[in-house]
Length: 501
Image (cartoon, rainbow, N blue to C red):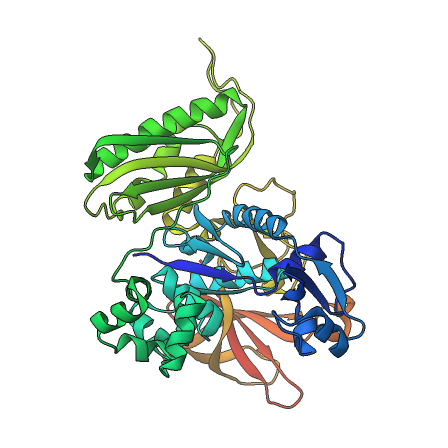
């Protein structure tokens, strides 16, 4: 299924100028100026200028009369277009299928890569956040078709449009969301047609005679009845290999064979450059121009062709070849320096105590489960259970940190303490019984309490409550880690935090 992001940059010319440092301080209005004959008009305005009532198309004289301290820069469309291409290259970090959409947009097909970011919502949030950190104002929307995503990013209110709601989501948007020529929009406005639903309800033949074929084509592209191809941007210096087939292919065995051939050729190219792959994109070009893209990453730089090909094994089964695939391309979209290493020698085995290379296992698990789900736990110097461990990269170097040997901690620590109903015979005694997940446990042995307080160096920001922990054993021999806390405004509460082996 196709999922396309339309990235909209409403103030791209002024954002580009500010990023280059040739602009006034943030908050002061800035516009660019274009010349039409003898008239000087506003070509673009930043958010500060918009807030003061300035709009694209106003004369510069009128704008300066409204805003006396207005900063003016000459519009440079060529530099804007070149910078947009560079920004599109940066967006390849989110998907291998990225295409500039001049003058103020970028297309990103995320059908094969959104899972790597935790879903479409998180991908969009990360994209907008990182652009904002660079001083770029942006809006983005994702939908099944480029047309629907484009319209929603500029005129809609939904960041993510589900497949079953595409038609309903765009129905109330203005007809300007169809990317029609200004002359056509003026004709539609004269007829009182302002929304896409009104235009879609018109008979197709009279509409085509009056406005031409473009209106019907844009409607079909919007609703997914006509395919709209994207021409992916592949930088010339990016290592890549491409195969074109004499006859279209579609069988899984053929796709695997092609992938192994591409991987072997690409790794040979990388060996000549002393580089290794960190991110690999596989693009299948279908006859109907509906490309299918897959992406995998590696924990360390590598140019082991069989290993890289295996990372795509399970995902190849999800590829829909349609009426056939006419070409395939393998792109090393992220590489790192990698010199040659001697891995073995005749009559010499691997020395005892040599470190085991787990990068291949991490890569395979990451390709299957997602790279963010593969991690390692590292001890943190803290007596508070929730703060005594943190997640780090699975292949991060050892730091030598270790938990104190004197701490008796359960084998399994719950992610969050769970509330239990418990009764103690005396205020400072362990519970005589407790109910956890609707099961009653009678305590026959107990040890404690171990009192844990907050960390004083955090000051008033530390909201940790004093806890008294007990190690208890029930009548069946199961052992639990239970604590009692006592908020100032409540009676003591009991929680279960871990289970011993």
